Image 1 (cartoon, rainbow, N blue to C red):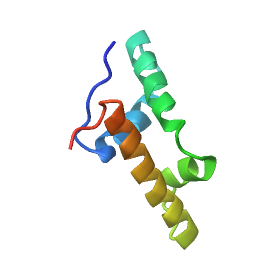
Image 2 (image 1 turned 60 degrees about the horizontal axis):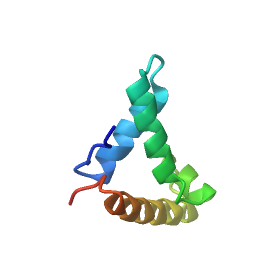
Image 3 (image 1 turned 45 degrees about the vertical axis):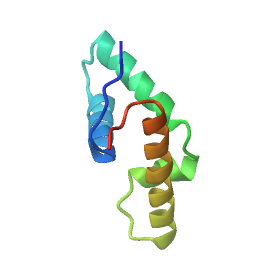
Image 4 (image 1 turned 180 degrees about the vertical axis):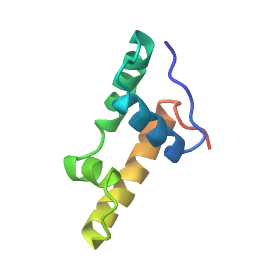
Length: 83
């Protein structure tokens, strides 16, 4: 299965969150989720947590921005993000 190419990081994250919360995902969806989770492994723990946080804390904001940059770079390298 070929991973889709997303038009934006926001589109990737929205799809990832939808697949992660799906209760009755099929085999293809589970494989795609595994590929998406594999790409998230480039992030440190605090960056990964910050992606899902709406906290106004400046440190969390820095981690979130760093995570977005690092993840976008990784997705481009994997051909999963088009700009």
